[in-house]
Length: 431
Ligand SMILES: [Fe+2]
Image (tube, rainbow, N blue to C red; front, side, top):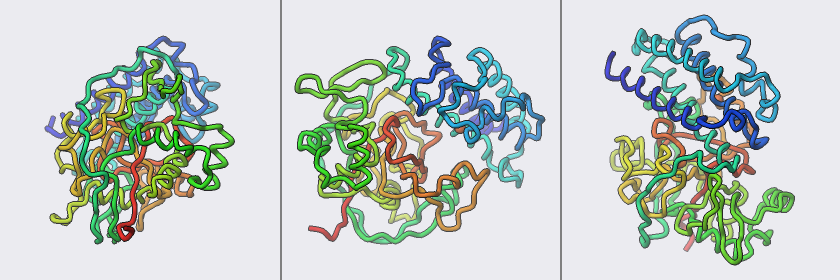
């Protein structure tokens, strides 16, 4: 096997051990629906195998379906999450057997594939990148389900570098054009393409994500009770839901606590805030006299190397993330403290843009100019309807294989169970 094939085989193995680790639990926990927002964990497990069968075995490998009768059950578009518990889904043992059977054949296809094949699914191993990234994305979803399950002891925690207090609050990004999106990252999704020129005026962007301490100050200042900071829709949502703090936060005496994977602990004030909706992020930004960055501002600050006239794959350059550069790949089950990654700073000095928390942007999810859906419309295009806000940068639960400066995620502005925070920006003209 070539080095590239060995690397893909290694990535396939790594993502599968991750999925199996998140489903190492009693059957009852795996088949239960912990929230109407989420699938039972065992659905996610068989779904990643079914997706792998569909794309690698059938579409790229030309093989006949192994179990065509289960396709509809595992098609995320035919069965909304709320309906999944009532379907005849595979039980945990059967799901594990099924995905293992698929995986064995996937490795045979990998062994035989020609990466110079002009077919776009096979060229540069795109289809393998597709399934590896897809499974990592489901692993992150499974972590969100495990968080909602409130079961303690199922999710591994770990050590992270310490906070580094001090340093400027904002970094300046000079006016000028940059290249947004990519034509050169072989495993980039359709929604990251094509690369296109975007000219931006100068702006300031926060050096770090908004921390729990700053967010608590917004709460203490009555931010949740002052409609001035909220959009009309956001205010209506806040009132209807009775929201007064990030999801999983409670006030015990005078102090904020949070429940994280089944354990309650004091809120660490020097960590990026997570589990806030777009509406909350937007209200905080207005209270702070700022706004959310646009998606283009976010991407330029994250990776545009003006000197070299090109975008970096990661803020620090093109080399792979290490534990000193970013908090990715579930090293610990939480964001790292603010300032923990000076070596991971981007070209303008912004830190922690990759890893820790997904970051809400002010932009609706849409196709770039010249967008062409590939390999299927339901990956991105059906979401281009101004219902979804763009999220950037990946969280502590995102894997390095499924994150880069151009990577785009999206969700409804009301969503809070995802590992999402934000940072603010402002126009440079303002004094
Ligand atoms: Fe999926």
